[in-house]
Image (cartoon, rainbow, N blue to C red):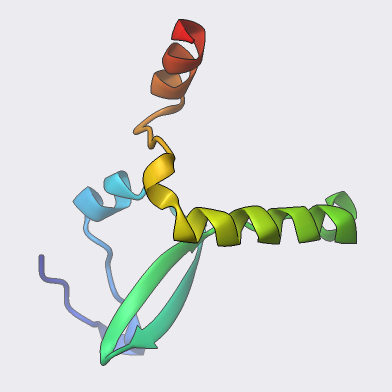
Length: 89
């Protein structure tokens, strides 16, 4: 899929990719360069007032485990699909 960099360094993310990543205007993303390629990663931010260090530690541990064992996790294309699966357990 192609996209063109416009003036002011703006880049349009094609609708198909937005849908696959469940992105919407205003969402945060992280951009990195890895092996000469741009990697765009959706980011979820949490307001500081809702965060504490113990939760941060647990989230980091779980995320590190997930990165090493992602095949153990199911993925869902919608919240409805998730809730339907939970109801069937």
